[in-house]
Figure 1 (cartoon, helix red, strand yellow):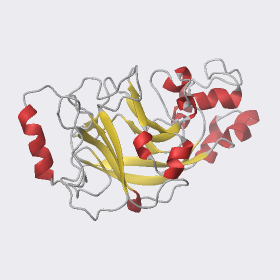
Figure 2 (cartoon, one colour):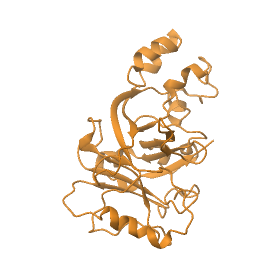
Figure 3 (cartoon, rainbow, N blue to C red):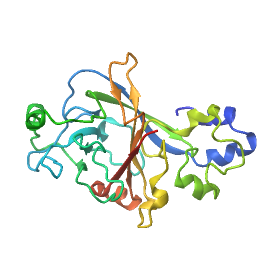
Length: 272
């Protein structure tokens, strides 16, 4: 949210305003626009992205190609602390799987998704046509696309406060959001502060439960890298849809973010 302090002053009880303002984080929010075919190296959701031919194209365990969920060209974005200032971060998932490549029993299993970071674009990429042709042998297979067309991602440097039902909320306030008694954080008037939307960094949002609550292997401390939320075009001419209006989250440890070890990212999605 661009005017987060003003919104907090207007909406939250006075005795809680400074407490919640102290949880502010810088984020990059994204909106979308449909503008036809886009260059392989630009920030986008859906469509086809940059994958150098020096590497094998990502496939699932059955040999079916993964699909571009989203990619982010950092040179097109405002600077965000801890994030790269150049290069391309790309998220691929399995549209031939009704769970979109996620393994909710084993988050280490990356058979159905990959996250890549490319420092530069010096190598030749698989072309749009070459990538499309990889799907041709499987055209009779059922697919479950999240993004139904190629969309440009428009970045905006913004701020977010901690008002979502997450592990961060419980650690900060020593209680779950459900049991918080300072005021009713589920009141509809606070919805604009909660943080649903597509973003880099900040606090995640869920339609169900934060999966980090059940983790004991260090992943309970991981932070949000990227979040892609369900949304529609203004004329209903395109959509991003996780199941029944759900949301997808990609997590990373702070150490791996600093070291650009994006191959260690894991992901979750849920829907109502």
